[in-house]
Image (cartoon, rainbow, N blue to C red):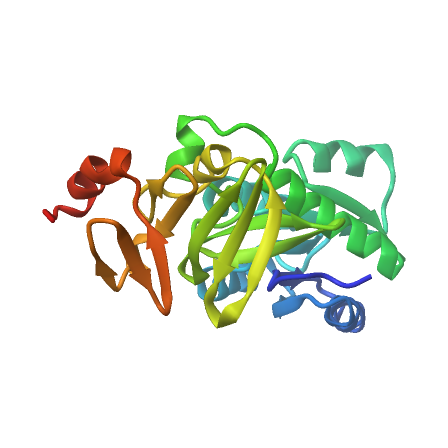
Length: 250
């Protein structure tokens, strides 16, 4: 049971011993802890400075604002998932928590398995990897971050930053994703559906079976493009769109 991908998590908990215990659990599960805050004010600073993917948020915090006040700001301004942590399971607390639409709710004490499941489900729900994308999603393909996408691998999710995804090869209902560092991922998706989840300003289909990251194109010829040591074929039907998108003529 270990997280795949660099999922960055901010802990907001006003009891230091509990915060340290949560940090230890998260690190042991393979997550990256960006910081620990004890108040809403401190958490807002760390949200801006470290840009986490998810927040573990205690409901009862020091200061004038509690976790629910902070959650409302996270929901409206940062648009990243958050999971409430609390020792209180009474109806009043639960109803207040529901009002800000949390992505998870954990009662203390919780196990590593509880924590892992809550995080993976929260990330998965936000990413909606397998759902059809609409026009809004094409312009902003990931509700969790605007610089990455999460893909399914076995029963987990792997985070891929857009600038690390070099090119994509389609084989029917499967795709090979070629990334920096020689990494490669195989996922079940059509090229059309997957491209709808990526920013059109960065990724360009150049062949019925290939798409490339525009920022990694090193050279272009009429029949192929060069990315690193790889020659990616260009389909004749895509040439005019390539010219128009890249403002070139060849």
